[in-house]
Length: 335
Image 1: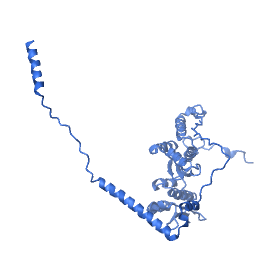
Image 2: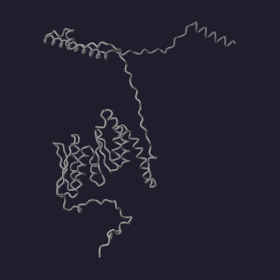
Image 3: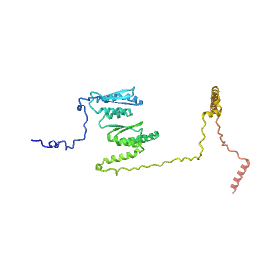
Image 4: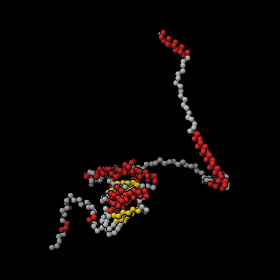
């Protein structure tokens, strides 16, 4: 009998089982690849001199973590580089890329406790270069400070919303976390360096996070809930340039150094006379400075002005004043 068409298309017992997660990616174990890799792969990265002391300190821990995956790590302090390479015993083919990211993060000032998380499944990293976005140095520093925020509050809010670890260091920003969070963080960081304040993006992310909690709005368009910010071109005050009076004649040429020396007569002096003049000038300057120092020293010997206190002793009244006083009292009694 000929085989029936679609016999293999019968429903499997796990097809309609709600407990089975069909999208789950199982962890890659040593038993999945017992024969190891055929070729050796290696990656190297340079690190700045100021990171040398820290990398030397944590390097034994790096080697210990990578040895779990049979990956070899080498540190060259003379050249200032870190190298990772696979061995014949390495069973995970993707771990070399994770090891490469680990040494990259260490070179960009990410602490080892955070950088080692890159070896986990589902954790990725991105090093965003922000140095070339803004040409002006002062403007670049201001926008980078805006990204960090007062005492790191803006960066902390961005970390919570994107579920990523973010570190700003020099001309780069290191981001670690899930792919979706890295994409969002990258967009916010680049827009901040392009003069879009991070508060607008943070506000939008907060609304999106609240909307995602509601299952009824999962299939709806969220644009009506999101704030619509309009770009405003703030006019800056321009300094008015004073118009100079027009003259058909060009400005007088500036005198040369030789012309000034000729006017003063120094041009015609011999080397010996020039040297004597310079020495004389030095001596005069020394004498004037010496006199100035002496005057300052003498100031400490000048006594301060004494404050004159007014005497509170009452003047004695005259005999005539006393007579007049007694007469007044006598008249009052008689009345």
